[in-house]
Image 1 (cartoon, helix red, strand yellow):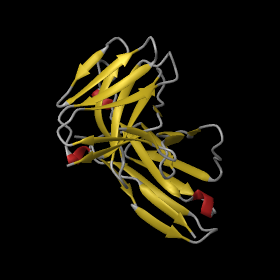
Image 2 (cartoon, rainbow over the protein chains, first blue to last red; image 1 turned 90 degrees about the vertical axis):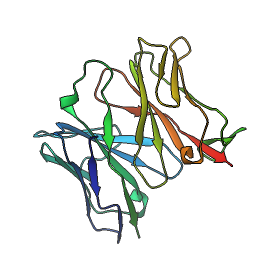
Image 3 (cartoon, rainbow over the protein chains, first blue to last red; image 1 turned 120 degrees about the vertical axis):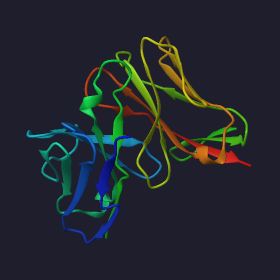
Image 4 (cartoon, rainbow over the protein chains, first blue to last red; image 1 turned 180 degrees about the vertical axis):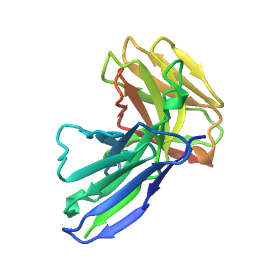
Length: 121
Length: 111
């Protein structure tokens, strides 16, 4: 099946530094990728939709200048948490849709990365 | 039994029993629903999906039921195994690209 690789799996950084998280679709092209944030014992909250070759669409309440998203190719989207603070500590997860599967019928599955645990000291 | 934790409700079942995990969705315009399984420290894993023009769909050991009248979705797991222990999320889609996740239920399977 389709594989989405997310890197790094875990990062610890000092307050004020920036952290970049990569999301790659390994065996399919993803024109759209999604970034989620998940706090402990809570659900996944959609942060933004990343479209290849265009600006990301952010959900209400998500600061676009703090969470920079770049989707420069059909297989790679990056999320940069700029000037990270302890309240940004969370589990960040990306997902991608395999457009080749098509939207006819049942299969509109998103494939998820394994997540990145960010801890800001 | 079922209990409500600090954030996630928890369902505890005996190995071999059937599990039923429930989900209430919010948007009557949602037309596509998915159940995901998430193990600790990992991303969600697709289990089964269903469109709004269906009431029931079966997979291997899992069944999803959809009641559009009351906006309710359920996931039934037959012969629950210890490896089924995880957090289960329902997610809904309403014709846009976005997938909105529900609260989640922790399933604990005891031997």
